[in-house]
Amino acid sequence: MNKKPIIIVSGEPNSVFFEIFFKSIKSKHYKSPLIIIGSKKLLQKQMKQLGFSFEINIINKNFNQFSKLNNKKINLINIEYKFNNCFEKISNKSNNYIKKSFAVALKIIQQNKLSKFINGPVSKKYFLKGKTLGITEYLAKKTRSNEVAMLIFNKNLSVSPLTTHLALKNVHKEITKQKIYKQINLINSFYKKKFNKLPRIAITGLNPHCESNFKNSEEDKIIIPAIKKLRLKNTKINGPFPADTIFTKSLIKKYDVIIGMYHDQVLSPMKALYNFDAINITLGLPFTRISPDHGPNYSMLGKNLSDPKSLIQALKFLDK
View (cartoon, one colour):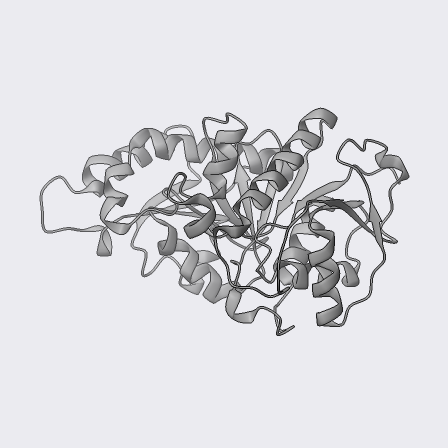
């Protein structure tokens, strides 16, 4: 098998990720060998509880004979994790396990010059503890990447929040012309490299109807001047659009990407339109990192009802 492997960090052990992983590998929508990093015991326990049956191929963290790999078994790098029940509540108990899993993955990727990486969800409350806003920023820090952006990708429409997991009261403080320019550059580079095209981009305003009842609004002061400058070189960029109308059927057909000013402004309508048929791509890292577009979803843990569509899409995307 000539394809380079896809490295997968299972993430939060008390999440639905193993369940959707089992469902995804059963679907066989990919040919690249997979290497998952996580707890062997936990994987086996959840596999049994959920009614799946796969053989496991244990490989060590210094493994580099990727041409010998196939997907007849689950290729696993075991990270020890102590647990009492295979469906426990999320807590800081798993922090060291998650941290070690990421460290092993990043080392393998760097040493072997690999480019395909997926991670399962983690708890921002317990694992990140406010030190970074999300895994996008966590990986940027670990790889010393200065400029990164979140792109929620679907082949019909993608969205990208200018700010990610910020409290609403702080969003306006982080909106700058430079941030808009950098986001546009990262998105353009991604679409040129992956699809050989310049994407059609719509940019939202921050305030309702792109208006406000005070002077020097973010639209007047930052967003409109930034768009005017960008349009001098790229007429495929338009805005600002009110967030309550840009997602209407007539408008979304005209654009490949909608850039919003904050997380839920664009992710909420995206999920309403496509459910879990989208993937979270981090732009600006030295490798392609994708996270399935769902969280740990503890309320669904052990119920065998979780939708694997987002992970299947991630595998298909990286397999091309």
